[in-house]
Image (tube, rainbow, N blue to C red; front, side, top):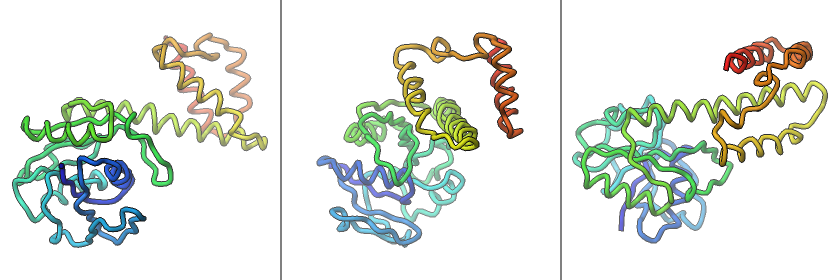
Length: 249
């Protein structure tokens, strides 16, 4: 049985906590967080500490804290030669202190504490400095996911960059669409079937093949009409930027 200590209890580790709790082949030995947390039943018996000096021995330590704090935090751990991994998409394995064996356990998903996720469908990207540690991480990852792959820090940085485009930036466009509708008291729910169909298309088509709209058609009359309807300069800026990029293809 693989034993795990979760270091930090933010969005990623709180979801890993729930996913790991359903496995019979691994055990969460402890949760560390710098401030007190409420672990709900039936997992309330799992030991919790706010003292880094009280962290217990385990097979794997998973750091789930803000990216810019990972390096310093890993240096403060009061033990050596154990397997310590982080969950960040954008941080190199080298950011971890080399006093311990280093690795990465990166679930490629957007996490919000208030929303449940199906971990079996989430890709988990792994990296380790030696084969034995990689094998251990693979065994751990396959307990909760059907999509486990080894990816280097350089590849993961590009993957994280692409994820920002398709997730963070796309969600920002949803927000602008919502703002445009709100001006006329229209519900964002009207757009949800379109959003869902757009996502479904790329299951069978490449993003380039799935592209539609007035910019792709070079429909200047519709583009000018849209620009005339926009009241927010920020919306005009983004509409123009994307339209010009698509017209150039």
